[in-house]
Amino acid sequence: MRKDVRILLVGEPKVGKTSLIMSLVSEEFPDEVPLRAEEITIPADVTPERVPTHIVDYSEAEQSDEQLFQEISKANVICIVYSVNNKKSIEKVTSHWIPLINDRTDKDSRVPLILVGNKSDLVEHSSMETILPIMNQYQDIETCVECSAKNLKNISELFYYAQKAVLHPTGPLYCPEEKELKPSCIKALTRIFKVSDLDNDGILNDNELNFFQRTCFNTPLAPQALEDVKNVVRRNMTDGVKDNGLSLKGFLFLHTLFIQRGRHETTWTVLRRFGYDDDLELTQEYLFPFLKVDCCTHLSLCAMIQDRDCALSPEEVKDLFKVFPYMPWGPDVNNTVCTNDQGWITYQGYLSQWTLTTYLDVQRSLEYLGYLGYSIIYEQESQAAAMTVTRNKRIDLQKKQTQRSVFRCNVLGARGSGKSGFLQAFLGKDLQQQRRIREDHKSLYAISTTYVYGQEKYLLLHEVMPDFDFLSEADLACDVVCLVFDVNNPRSFEYCAKVYKQYFIDSKTPCVVIAAKSDLHEVRQHYSLTPQDFCRKHKLHPPQPFTCNTTEALNKDIYTRLTTMAMYPHMAQADLKNSTFWLRASVGATVCAVLGFAMYRALLKQR
Image (cartoon, rainbow, N blue to C red; front, top):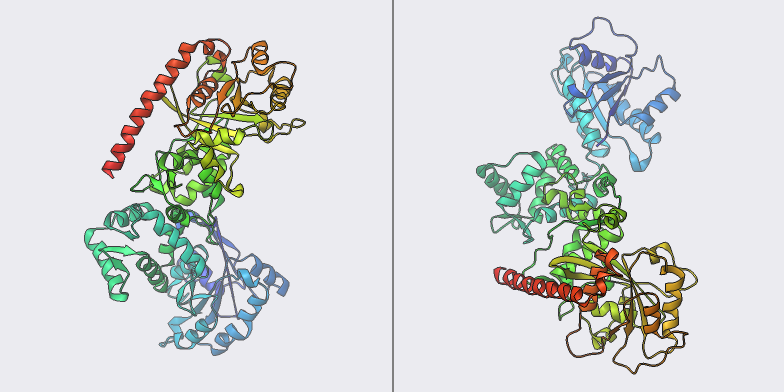
């Protein structure tokens, strides 16, 4: 909403422009009226909309055409004043003033106009019969007010309507010729309806209507008032009320009715509460609230998924994101997070994707939560409340403990070494399933949960494209590194050895060597040291054998080890060598996996 309003009064000489301003300020008709009133500013605390208002007078006798043109360009709303007892001043509205204003304003951003019939105390009849055809001809005219500066009739109302025309304009919402809402308004109100439909059944029940009412107007509706609203809709359309709840059609009809009855402020209050600006676009402040990030962020959001089978079908994904201006997830998401046997995103996969988005681009995550109406649904000041910012990683190393729940593992290796297979196996996909993945649906990320000492943590795997000559800071910035080589390719390990010596030998980042495709015959590597000797020399764990070419359940122990090393980097070269440490970590993961599965089944049964 605008921070101030600038009102310009124009019209023929002697119609009472200056008198109107002076009567408003002094609350009495002036004995002497100057040729032009000085610009006045009405403070915010004495205006109905709580916005500072500047009122500017125009005098043909004192001002040049150029000065008039400048004032027109600065005005937010223009009042064209005529005298109800002077036909010539009425004719000048259409023959001079409206064309002049239109010539001096951009077609795409016309200022609203208010027609003001002054001196109503001098006649017994109304000028509205003459004015209504003019209002129908020019859509920029917001309203017409008949008033009297002499007896103070409708003076306050005049300036209230002028202020309202700026703060609650009709133009973006409604097309008077078609007598219907504009497409951009329908789009915004449809999103608001979907956000308010908390159980996602396509209607707003009494509880949801009351929640909506409290959200926008800070007060609930009485039961009888709710019924009255629904009865108004029932009388005007057949499918506006379904199962005693308000349908989208009924919701849109109500707002059409508000606007037709001059209650634009009701619709604008709703739109602004849900983050929209005067152009019906979500504001930058709403989508990107301030969030100070020193280190990492993760989502403390429990869930925004409302589904009966704990998985999202493609149709449900589309429905979920109907409130977005674009589809945020591409087809690669099904190969980034866990899916069920049908290829649908599971509940855990859904949360994992949100976690990934937040980790990689917190601003994008804030934007997504904004579209979904997080701050509205959870009654928070902004969606920043869903974020937890953890302390700097250096402090974690000093204190030898971490508050983080997301750990990044960069996976490096020569082309064809098995990096992609390692990522997909983390999501539970064996080699046969991986071969069915389309090339344009592949992902360089895989994220899921592991359990370390009974704590659920997210492990984010990132496949780094093999370019030994240049690895960026992003390629090197991680909590743990996987160096993958193909046991069946004699030239595969050399890349891992060179990358380690070039970038990680003096790093505090823990490294693990993965001997991929271990189901194949192991050949001698063309390198001065065998992988085992290389690891021994550099005090690394022995190469970890790995294969995804199996019909049995894929072994996930390696991912738990990676998460543990990421959590406790100071122990990577000491305690982690002890086999009992790995046993304790694995047992913790197994116990939590069982508990997690039991909870998952309980949720399914409950739903």
